[in-house]
Length: 184
Image: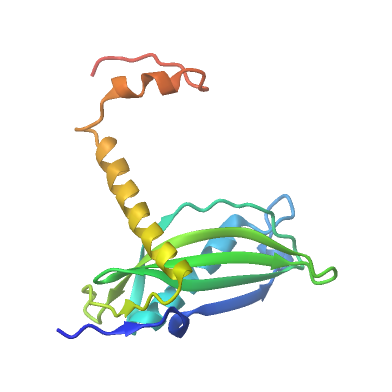
């Protein structure tokens, strides 16, 4: 099968929305869940544009909310393909807010969505690769590979059948937890 490749620019998506009072939480800031929903939408759009297929979210890697978003601010989400596998891709999503009155911009969070391309029958389908034409794109691709390896290692080390409690006892010292083990 002949593999085709696309530039990351071909599928980049940007979305800007005004933050309304209906999007706020009890403290008057924009609700994190609302922002996550927007992030998932833009990751879907970017992945679908790249693959030419319907895509589903397989996983989301680490979402740290760095700065609160205020009602009345403009929020801009940017999505780009960082990594392509055979049927899956990692979409990098960046969220920034802008105060309309002052023009001040804040980086609110970034995250990585693993998306899988599906056909009409719901089966995984091959996707185009990406062209790595800058050092930054190579860095993002390599970082995605490293994240995948870390995730595999985490999953294996903490699997019930593989977990070795004695390796982690020292790390529990000074934590807000008290061990009272009961044999089972």
